[in-house]
Length: 66
Image (cartoon, rainbow, N blue to C red; front, side):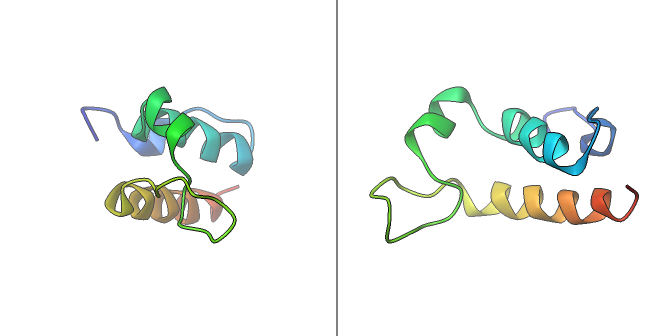
């Protein structure tokens, strides 16, 4: 995505990988003003569903290798 190989994002564990992926896939402004998925608990809009799908897909793929 944007010339970055998402499989090569460095991280010491799956949780760090997920956080690092968020920083690559979304701007700081998007992260501050949105939630990952729509929730009744928050009035914030959800992040881009397509990019969230990429996030979860890459996380699941990477998690198999930990």
